[in-house]
Every structure is written in structure tokens, then in C-alpha cells.
Amino acid sequence: MSASLPPNVSIPDDILTRPREERIQLAIAAIRGSGTKPNGDPWYSARQAEQHFGVPRTSLGRRLQGM
Image (cartoon, rainbow, N blue to C red; front, side, top):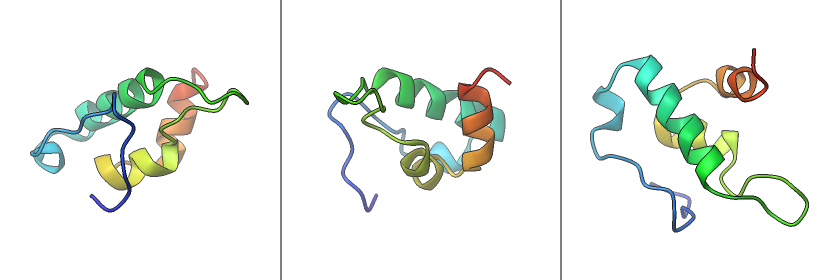
């Protein structure tokens, strides 16, 4: 992985072999579990999750907004 991860975010080694829906759920859990910065943004962004979990950022954004 190119970018460093927050200490409380872990990504399974076989993530890219898992079904897309499972990767989306794991990415959302990682974003929500990363905590927030003082400005309210998550430490682990949807952009980072897109790269690490191999899922579209738009899908993550919509799911995080409850759509």
C-alpha cells in the first residue's frame, strides 16, 4: 500500500479477491472506525479507501451519506 494508514485501520491481504459488496462494507467500516480530525473529517478518507479496497469513491460517498 502506498499511503500510510491510521493505526486503527487494517486491510486484509486478500482484499482484492473478495466480492465488491464485501469490499465496500469493509471500506465503510474502515472510514467510520478511523475517527475524526478536529475539523470533523475522517482520518481515513474515501479517496484512500478507494485505492486500498478497489471500490469506487462515488459508491462509498453515497453509502456514507445514507443513500
